[in-house]
Amino acid sequence: MAGSLLKNKHCVITGAAGSVGSATARRFLEEGARVVLVDLDQPDIDRLELGAFRKSVLTVAADVSDVDSTAAYVDAAVQRFGEIDVLMSNAGNFGTVAPIGDYPLDVFEGVLSVHVRGAFLACQNAVPRMRDGGSIIITSSVAGVTGDPGVYGYITAKHAQVGLMRCLAKELAPRRIRVNTLHPGPVDNSFQKNVEDGFTAATGRDGTEFFNSIIPLGRHALPDEIAASALFLASDMSSFSTGTLHMVDGGMSI
Image (tube, rainbow, N blue to C red; front, side, top):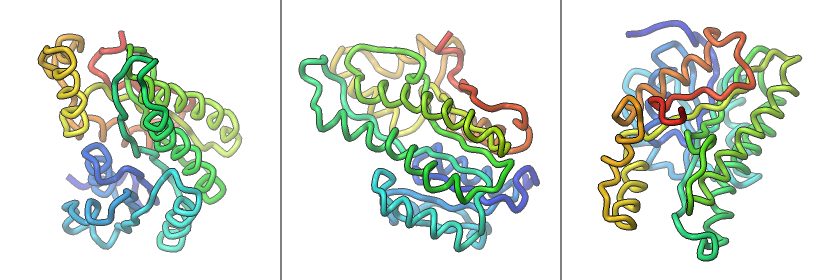
């Protein structure tokens, strides 16, 4: 059902080809937004089914951890749709699970490069070209408020995003730009399945059943449920929310 919560708002979403990014893009478009979809590989973005919304969409292939690539996708966004109203830094990767002595440094740095450097560069380039009164959403995770052995890259990165958000929220408050982190729990998608397959291989326990057992609501989230929370943070429904950790984890962090 079409709405107007983001009518004529210019929204930029990184990691747009994944399940959460694409679900959020569709929800924003349904609410009247003009959306720039950024992901590493153009074919992945092109496969998204956007139907009648194509005229309201710009797709850009970019490496979010690269300075020039980030500047280029922000430039392209502004040239197409004007000043930015909503930035959702959503690109991510997982890395691996290993004891601290065995955790590969290149994997650790690669995870931080996408999540932390990528979010920082997105904000550094987009903020000067945002309208006052806008919104920045950084997709963290339930892993951004918890800790588990072996998940050094991903959990460190997700905690670091909270620090970035808090700095930005205070700096941008005079411009009425709200900045919040979004913290999904396990989502029913291929990203989580890869995590759970690794868990199963390492422990011999069914990964999906294990995660469901530690979520009070007893199930994984659907991508559309995460998108609904992103819409709340992007729209004026969250007009007095900034500097917050918005949990969408089925109670997993309790």
